[in-house]
Amino acid sequence: MTELFDETEPYDSGMLAVGDGHAVYYEQVGNPRGVPALVLHGGPGSGAAPGWRRWFDPAVYRAVLFDQRGCGRSTPSAAEPDADLSVNTLPHLLADIERLRAHLGVERWLLFGGSWGATLGLAYAQQHAAAVSAVVLFSVTTTTAGEVHWITREMGRVFPEAWEQFRDAVPPAERDGSLVDAYARLLADADPAVRDAAARAWCAWEDTHVSILGPVEPDERYADPDFRLAFARLVTHYWRHAAWRAPGELRDGAARLAGVPGVLVTGRADVSSPPVIAWEVARAWGPAVRLHIVDGAAHGSGGMGDILRSALSRFGTELSS
Image (cartoon, rainbow, N blue to C red; front, side, top):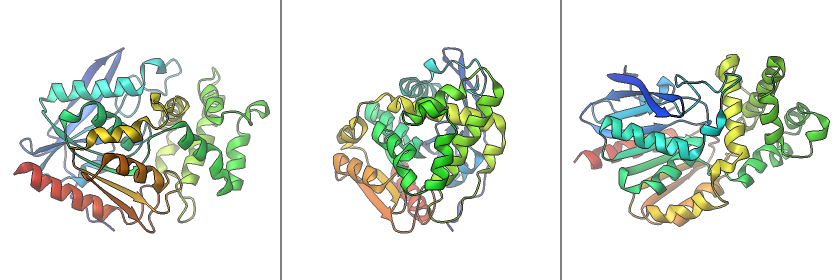
């Protein structure tokens, strides 16, 4: 098990108005004069839990955590029945990050994230490469329609019993179509019981498809009805729009990062974000990135921690010199 740093309390936190009636929560931990680093949490909708702080040496890094639109401590919450998701898109998140960077007076920062955070990190780095000092991403996704189809359809071959329950939670007439679209509709239903049933079914499938290396362990966060509803609404919203990017756009766009050092880490047994995604991104990126495919590791679990810790240590030394 990777030994992380002791959790430290933020030396600064606040709410930043980003437009469209949204405000995002942010916090800074570590050394105010240290190497700036931005945490990009997964989901979408997971929020920046305190555990993210432990990846960063508090003597070396000035780590910035923030809750993306609609989740965590940011307002309004996507769990609210009338939450307007039309102003919660990838372009909105990229603009939010730039507002946060300007607000904090950061010139360049290291990006650290996983799963959906990897998609967001790739998109931000490609659009704002001059603002990025280095990139460390794990469980790499690019949120293409093909990746979404794989998780919501093809992985039924791996987990047939659980997938059948996932499929059958939507009305019969919608079971042969886009399950993401069907769930998005149910999660926005006027009846709170319908919304909650859909959120429970969606989160049960999330628990299943990340559990390839062992028995399903329910994520305790899903016990919170507001968390699971906001999470499910945001995931389905971003997935049904394929992150507002064309097929292969984030993969091929990695060529723009030729001058940005990076580390990509993924698990050989990760069926939620198969290793081929990171492999293709790394090929487009070129020699500036190091790819690690870890045997015995799955989605966000297994033996990836030591590699991530080593990468952050190395970049911390190089960027502070």
